[in-house]
Length: 113
Length: 114
Image 1 (tube, rainbow over the protein chains, first blue to last red):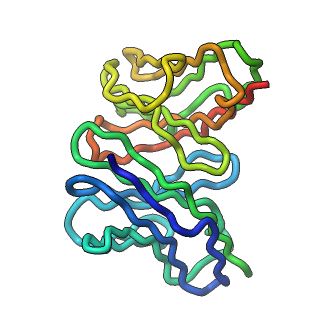
Image 2 (spheres, chains in turn blue, cyan):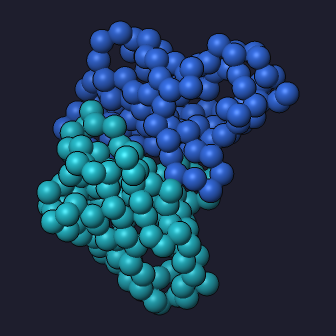
């Protein structure tokens, strides 16, 4: 069965600095990887996904993620953090076939002005 | 275009009661999935429906059931509510039921069981 690990419960970064939110996964076969963001009392908003092809995926709001097959990782990055990026971030993985989307526990990002 | 809509926004029930949650997908999307998000955790998959057929079921008891209607909207039903059923219930829609599809989430229904 597939699984996702987000090793950091909380990430703090100063506004204007680069940010990284870590994600590792375990899946049989080629993974389909997703990042979502959740603001307080809201549903999840899609940021980006990796299906195949270029390992660097660009998404919404200036976010990008790099797929690393050898390290089974899909870390989320942004070159310059904004206070408005402060939210809960979820990594999710899906295996090929009729399988569910499995989420990590989430990482709370706090961007400090 | 309207996104995924869910109703009600909030709901308070007592143990033993049943509840029905509703979801309308993005126009043109034929698949709906349901997730339970307990405080401090990531969403956990409950069901996926496509073209009114159940395509997947997560590790939830039979008290949980769902259905999809011809207009692709969906209902999630939970019987014999337990305190542990208190959570945010999220609905997501996708164009098809492919594993590569992006799932778009609604704002959720906050269920509190007393």
